Structure formats: structure tokens, C-alpha cells
Length: 114
Image (cartoon, rainbow, N blue to C red; front, side, top):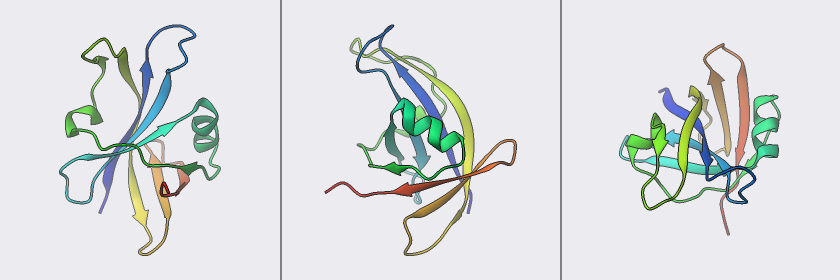
């Protein structure tokens, strides 16, 4: 089953220390978004096809999968940079294969937080 995903930029302002990227993946039950915060280095590695160790963040509402715009409570703005989907997941494995819209595949390694 294909699961949609997006990578968004969460932008607070130029040179702001909280600027980051977010990988959002629709959960298996389609009820929420799995969330993985990404640094600029993580994003570069992911887009170059290299495995990236990522730690899950807190889940998000489904509306943020394709949301671009202001975030409430003065928490900056978000912009979707990439839309794609997971095309293959190996059971009992931490490996996920992700396919970008131009058919280039990427691999991420999901590392659970301790």
C-alpha cells in the first residue's frame, strides 16, 4: 500500500535557530501523520539517496500533509517542498523505501527514540 508523504520547511525567520524541515508520512490507519524532524544535513543526505537516521517527533493532524501557510500562535509558517509516497515497507524492518514523483527512490532508516 502506498502511503503519501511530504517534506515541508518550517520557517520562523531568517537565521532563526528553530528553522527546520519536517517529514510527514500518513499513518497506516490513515488517522494522523507520522512526523520526523529533519536538519538541513538530514535533508541533503535523504535527497542524495543516502540512508538517514531519523527520530520520530510528535504526531500531527492530517491537514498538515499538504498545508502551506501560517502556523497559529506565532509559530512561523510552513511550505511543502516535496510530495511523494512510500512504495515499499519491509515487515519487521526499520527500512522504508520512498519514491519521489520523478521515480527516484530514497531510503530512510527509522530509529526509535529512547
